[in-house]
Image: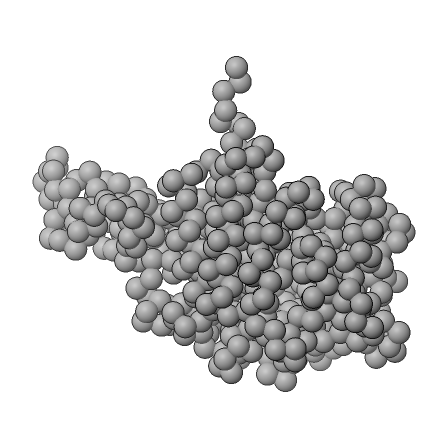
Length: 483
């Protein structure tokens, strides 16, 4: 190549991108192996497969590291290390099941709960197990850990929760590690004491609400079969008023084949109720959901989900209040960030063991919280009989992680969204009987394609309302004129 040449030949660069995806007329998305996205014209896409390309396109691709050249190869690997940094620091999220006891018997629960009066010695985590879990977790290499308390209803074992927090803080101070706490609750058993403790100890609490009363009660009932909506709303109103800083403002909302038909109604309900957004979650065929034959097939749920996103986007275009949808926020962060965001369920590879570990009530170590419903298949041992170093040195521990790597499938190696993808082999096993997620057949694959196409399309059409929908309104305010 001569200096100042208007073209560049193929002997000066190596591809560092996945095949482009047509988004609309003359608009194509090109994604590098470290997640950087560019929009190219049809002509620019053709140049990728020709002997020469224009110098202007070459310079653009070189700066963005979509191609590897003698001048940018160090930057290419620097970006790759940044994109995958979270994969190799050790698990940051440690999910702790404090009890299987629960005051509710939700139709879709994948945790196999038992009634609240069942034997605590059988169904609650003990302080001895807590000690072993803390020792195990703190021996992992990550310097920043989050312990998330789950159940059942974790506040039914409140004394052990308090012991866990105190003990973990004491031991973390000895190791120099930073720790945080979170809890997932149905809110209904929470007392002022519980909430004040959470505030004093910076424990954020997330909760589920499935929409209006009729829809909510279809899924979330007590053990006698009665709906939980009215009791929850009464408690929620009090909690939001007195402890709004403790609970997460975005409720979790599980969607199945039946409720997905009413998603626009559900969205309007959350918006009019003053919530800042919603986390829509597809039902998983595990535990109670499997026994109750609750389905969430992609042919039904995914189109309804995309329609719901259209409705939320319209709300953010037409109305003053910001309303966020969690997975849109994650998708935007994937596109805009130089790191793959730490959402362990939607990563390539997935976050099993690499980023998150689950501990069952007896200290059994599992790669994902969904694996509690299938321990025989996915158990990795017990904290009482295995150290973290022993775990991490066992190749078999990474079975689900390896199955989640998308470059293992030829079709995935040709997919634009490869860096943004994420499949959960544990859930895939529950869906199909095989932990191998097949491209274009897996529900996770279909979901990624649908969501990313939607986000990219609307990023180009309606960037400001989409940014509001992603929860980036404060950033947008900084760009608005002050006059």
